[in-house]
Image (cartoon, rainbow, N blue to C red; front, side):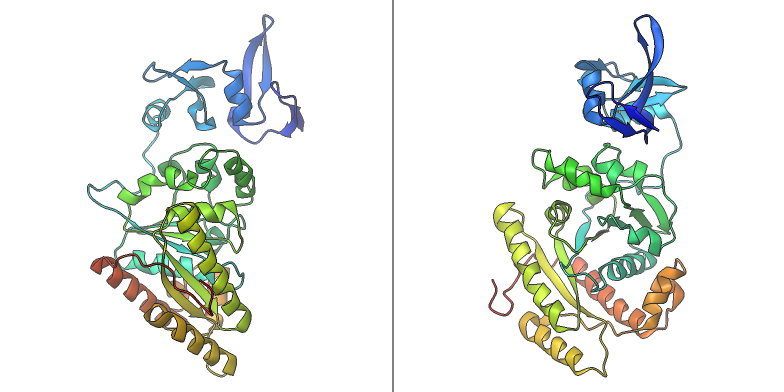
Length: 363
C-alpha cells in the first residue's frame, strides 16, 4: 500500500522500519511516514541526543535511528548503536594492528568476460588457502550471492545509503570468506552517491574498516561506466581484468586502460593494472590463440596464463558451489590456481604499483 511522506508528501511503499513511527500529533498518537533518510533527518528538527552516550548530533543516516522494544532511539556512532541493540557480534573479521588488505577490483567494461566467475573463484581459493578475504559485489544483478547460494537480508546498499557498518552487513559464505552482497536495491544507491560530496570516495569511506580486518578484498564490478565503478576503482589498489579471447574483448581492454588513467588524473588515485586474465580459452579456435598472442605482446608478464574453456565453470553456480568445490580437478580450476599463486606471491613481495600501459596505441 502506498503511503504519503509526512515531510515531502511523496507517495512510496514502506520497506524499512525507520520509515514509520508512532508520534503524538495534536494530542493523539498517530502513525507517520518518511520516504527517505533525508526526510527522516528533517523530521528530527535539527540536533538530537544520542540514547547511549547523550551526545548531541544531527541525524544524517537511517542507521542512526533504531527501535528497541518498539521505542525510537538515536545512535551517534556504530559503538553506540551496538550498545543499544545488544545483539551477538556478527561474523566479520576482527581488526589486526598493522594489517592492510590488498584491494583488487575485478573490472572490465565489457560483459561476458567472466568477471563474477573470476571474483568468486579467486576469493574462495584465497580463503581456502588460509587468507582472510572479503568479497564485495558492486553489481545490482547480485550474481555473487547467487553463485554462492547465499541468503541475506542486508547488502552493500545498506552500507552505502543507510550507513550500516561493514560488520552488520557481511555474510560468512565459507570459512575465511566473507561476502558483502548486492541486489537490485543497489541501483538506487547510484542516486544517493550522485548527491554526495566526494561522491567517488563514499565506498572507500564506508569500507575503510576492511583494510585492517582482511588480507584481501576482492571487488566484483559491473560491466559499465558507472559512478559505482568509479567508487570501486577509487577504493582499489589494483585491477584484475578478465578478457574473453575474442576480438571485441580486446577492444574492451582499451576502455579499461582509459578509465584507469582517468581515475589517476581526475581522482588523484593511482590504480595498478595488476593483471590481464584471458578467459574462455579454446585451444581449438584460432582467434583464441591470436587474442592471447596480442595480449602477451602488449602486457608482457602482466598477461596471466589463460583460463581454459570448461563447462564446469557454468555448472558450478547452478549448484551454489565454487569451482573448487564442484570440479576441483577441472582444467579451469587448475588455471585459477595459478592466478591465486601469482596473487599471493605478489602480495608477499610487496610489488609496487605500476601505471597502466598503453594498448594498441591507446594511452
